[in-house]
Amino acid sequence: MDSSTALYNQLKGAQPFFVLAGPNVIESEEHILHMAKQIKAVTSKLGLPLVFKSSFDKANRTSSKSFRGPGLAEGLKILEKVKATYDLPIVTDVHESSQCEAVGRVADIIQIPAFLCRQTDLLVAAAKTGKIVNIKKGQFCASSVMTNSAEKVRLAGNQNVMVCERGTMFGYNDLIVDPRNFEWMREANCPVVADVTHALQQPAGKKLEGGGVASGGLRELIPCVARTAVAVGVDGLFMEVHDDPLNAPVDGPTQWPLRHLEELLEELVAIARVTKGKKKYEIDLTPFRE
Image (cartoon, rainbow, N blue to C red; front, side, top):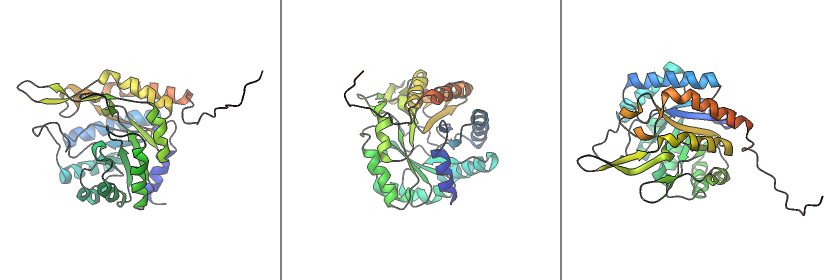
């Protein structure tokens, strides 16, 4: 069994769930190594499989002036150091087909951004690396779209795919999480992940002094969405975590504070252990007779 399939099976069978977590973007090597160490300490204590997440380039920023990250070459070097130093699998996102080969040499999971979830060439290029592919559901998509996106990966010869719910557009500057999607996305016949941080974004909903806009967010509702997701029975949680969210250069309003990570995950584990959400409810519609 190859390493990607082994990791995929480990995550698929994780009880009560696995975690994809880390800061939104690579700010520096020192910061990333610090975050990886701290997050691993928390998840190891709670017995949760961790895949460390951070991005080398945030291509889909609201403003061209916004911080994007160190770029492909430098970013992958830093992620490779995290992997070697802390023996952690890595997940990071790609935006172009040409990035997949290089990313696949470092990352264990290649993530497809929500806006690109239907891009066939990108899905196929990611699939051909042989690495696990995590596809985020577009904010504009019905859950049924993810069945087709997952199938594109499989038809390219890669069975190791997962799908991720990250909210649905609700007006111009807001997202809403429909818990039914956690159930409906199981029709893709693969692990379902809940992105409990991006789901609380308010896209381009924050006006800036001097003009322009940035994405806001409802950090205080992250526990609400996370509790719902684990109660329904998702296989994994995606969380962006930061040690100083107010000064995070990207998506600060929706990054969960590192100091509260253990407290929240501990509660979520307790909820997941009592719910029967992963089991399909067998509804008996025959006439009831006492």
